[in-house]
Every structure is written in C-alpha cells, then in structure tokens.
Length: 131
Image (cartoon, rainbow, N blue to C red):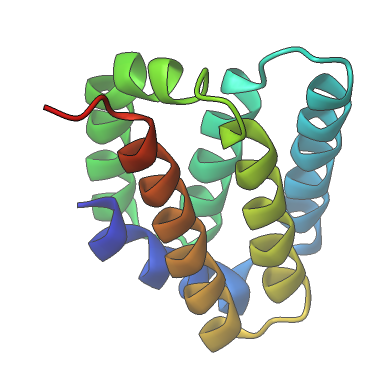
C-alpha cells in the first residue's frame, strides 16, 4: 500500500512544499541522523518525516489515509526499525527524497521514495527467518 501512496505524495511535495516545510523536513532529518549516530533508535523521526512529507503534498483525503495507516502500522514499523541496518538505510533514503524535494523535482522525488521503500522491503525480507 505504501508503494502505491508514497511515491506520488513525494512527487506532489516536491511541487508544493513551502520553504518552511522543507526546513521542517531538514530538521527532522538532522535529528534522525544525530540519534542514529548515537546508536539510538529514530522511530519517531522516521514516522515524522513521512507524515510531514504527506502534509506538504497538500491532499487532505490522502493525509487522512496516511493517518490511519500510520496508526495501523506503528507496531510493525517499530519492530522493523530494530532490524540491523534498517535505520541507516532509512536515513539514506530520506536524504535522497529530501534532496529531490528541495530541488522541486517531482519525478526524482517519486523515484527516491520508490527506491527507499524497496530498500526497506529488501532489508525486512532478508531479516525474516526461512521456513
């Protein structure tokens, strides 16, 4: 579901994000990077980054869907962020997405989000016990 919703949201945010919203994403990214650098989890920042991006897309209907999804996926997101390498990959993905939004490049933002979600999916699949 996220692969369907989030790339177009990132593209829309690249078109519509205000300087204040871009600054907010930068601030969230900086907090996430600092926490990861200290060996702490950055679950709150990960969720906040995706939510702020959805807000910058300025689509109230989709934002409500994102609200529901964030609530439904909170527990699995918390577990997935414990997987080794997941936080660092998430941070790298957020940087690419943020760079595309800052440059107001919708296509690049959508591709960066698609790549980000694909990388996270790969990490999670590899962490599952076989059987």
